[in-house]
Amino acid sequence: MSSIYVDHAATTPMVETCFSAMTAQMLQLGNPSSLHTNGRATRKTLEDARESLAKEIGALPGEIIFTASGTEANNIALKGIFWSARKNGRNVVIISAIEHHAVLDPAHWLAEHEGAEVIQVPVDSEGLIDLDFLQETLNTRRDEIAVISIMHSNNETGVIQPISEVVKLAGEIPVHSDAVQSFKKTPLSFSELGLFALTLSAHKVGGPLGIGALILRRTVEIPALLHGGGQEREIRSGTLNAPGIVGFAVAASSNHYDALRVEELRDSFIAGVRKVIPDATVNGVNAKRLPGIVNITFPGTQSDTLLLLMDGQGVSCSTGSACSAGVHEASHVLIAMGHNVQTAQSSLRFSFGATSTQADVDYVVSVLPDVIARGRAANLS
Ligand SMILES: Cc1ncc(COP(=O)(O)O)c(C=O)c1O
Image (cartoon, rainbow, N blue to C red; front, side):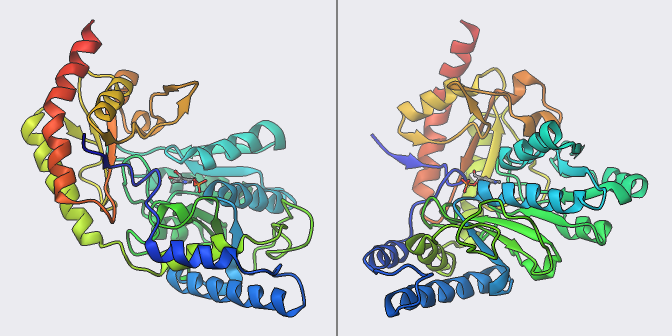
């Protein structure tokens, strides 16, 4: 049976050069905080990696804070900036309705435990944030707003948000953006966007699991979230994950992802799906999107069933939404775009990446008619 991986938005295959750089680094002895020769050698390697990553994201090396994940970077950004601003009497946290749980949940935690008021910016049927709503909120609540966090692109639909417009409207208010899905897939520069903070994750760009980064302007002072040895501007103590950081930098600078090629595969997939399942609809199809992500609603099906049927055909894809106790919730992203619970639970996410091929596309399209027919039959029984 074929084994087709179309879940690159969940995680990506590791780039070969990253693997070899990491394994070499694993054998290097030396804590980067140690002052002896071994320690200084590791420190030098890490600072070179920091510089290389900074170049890739259009930031200064000193603006990079390494974390253990994109989730951690989002948590530090939201909680840290909120706590800092609260000292000045600001308690409003603005997020979009379609954020990843790694932003949604810390925001709601701040509301439950730290007195934050969370305002969610709605999206239209294409999944684009409502800039008029944001403008109106800024007009009426400007002096109360602690932080604005709007994702650069959505992990379920791939829809790219107008972040530079958000930054323009926000003025002096700190804006954070979760760019985990965008990095290396679409043009992205921290300094050009004028953001205060931005989140990255290595395993979405051919790097290892367990390493992420928060890009944070030097002028933003936030309290320590992890106390200890004072690493990473005293915001995030802990001995640095040297192999992970080296792997992250190598993967990010490898330029193995050809956006145009991936976009062509995606469009060929959409054309194929439309031919074999004419009532399928592509979510966010009219918006500017990432090259690799396609979210499709197949009326009259249940996404959990489709996922298993696809898996039975050797295809790894995703429902895109969070899983709780083994059952996928209806996607809050699709609901925010106007779906009802039923149609939101009839959708699958296919995500193509650097290793995807036209043969993958053709195979997935070829198994779809049978999968959807069986999915519809199961839904009726
Ligand atoms: C948009 C977005 N933000 C954050 C994350 C979390 O990143 P990590 O897996 O590094 O914690 C993900 C991962 O799926 C994501 O897609």
